[in-house]
Image (cartoon, rainbow, N blue to C red; front, side):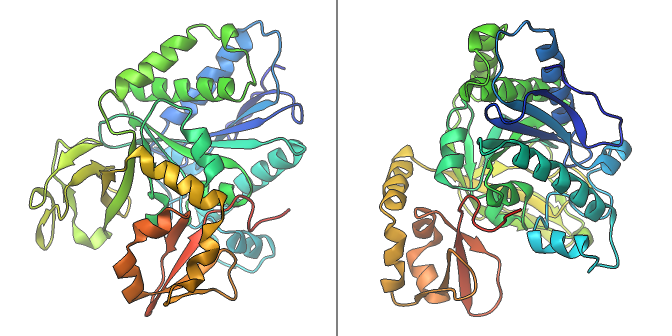
Length: 389
């Protein structure tokens, strides 16, 4: 039952429990090398579990490090963002020797993939949960984001922190999307600002609550379990519980992007308000909303995101639409047809997409796939729809 410590070069931080006896929860910290709070949170929970006299523990808790090379240098990444380009085609190409030039993150990807593959196989059919633990350069409350499948959503809604929808739609193949394709119930958790001690504490609370939600541990055996709930509730007091990303400001190193100081996650912004600048001048908000993940660091291509509150009513509507599989009726609309070479994917005419709006397709569980040309691709988030071992 004791968790196993590994040498610094290993992605494995430690593990507790017995594989195949219940759910497996994988906690990953440090997918970005300047986000060490997740690693420390995992270490804290594993060490505390070791000290408890548990009467029972069902399943396994596994702690993993993300980008080890970047963590050692305390920078976001070495050659490219490690939370991008997670694609089984890329992985198989590397494994088969089809890629001759590999960067640091390619090697890390293969190592981490092999770790995850082994964990899933050893779970012996029990559900596998994946928590991707993050912090950000801006102050603000913790929040959760995920690929909007019903299993992911049901898991995320068990935690008393805000939910951000659609963030993964604006990113290029993030890890949580890949883990969903593997069949894992997955979510990313932003704990707070990088070096704020409360950020690690928020992530610790998330891990403990995950263990109790899945009945892997009796909540009465966790000292101060109610304090974990209270901490998260206090951190998010008064914020909307569901926010959907409506806009992303993409940047490049040549832009000389500078975020205006003082912004924090969920801070309201108004049309015309100057929130940043670059080599072309002032950057002003184009919609009313809340700013998410304003960039206050040198690396990265996401300047900021803007989200708007979603009422819980629409969550209930989307559940019904998906339960009765009404997306099968979408091809009846003129300008919508099924993709012949991609599963769970529709091709939209741009005029129709503009008329209906992407919110309409979000209700059915579809998200935009970046594409060029006159047509738009939308794909449904489905667990285990793509990757088999």
